Image (cartoon, rainbow, N blue to C red; front, top):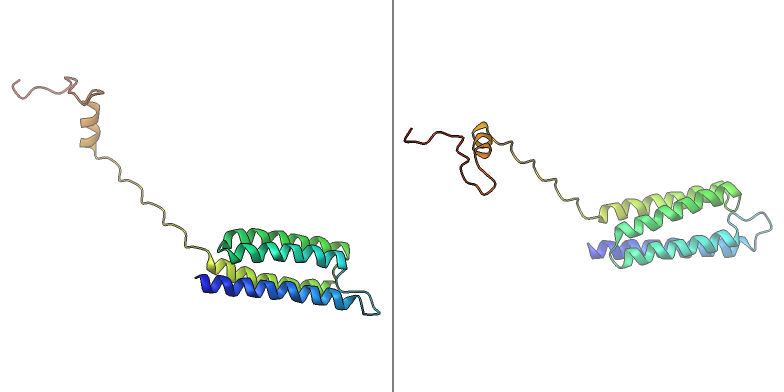
Length: 144
């Protein structure tokens, strides 16, 4: 499993590097950039948080950081800091990383089976015992 997590960490780091390169190159383009420098910087910090959690074997923590990255993507897209086309590409990458991280989560522990209900005889025996397990005298003695 640790090999899978380190692979995920490398993929996430690559995603972050690609975002930085795209942000850097967008500054050279004569048209409106697909992602603003501020948005790229914020996203890179979020990608680092995902990468660090995945690198230490914490897929749940990485998913939490990925949730924050996804929310940031939505906000930056809504504000125009990231183009819709670029946001779709980033979201596709987030979805792939989420699938890998989800697969790396430990299987949930099985729920314990409910204890069987006590039989009527067990209930009767309990009713006839005192706090210390002594007979309360509710049953007839064998000698009676």
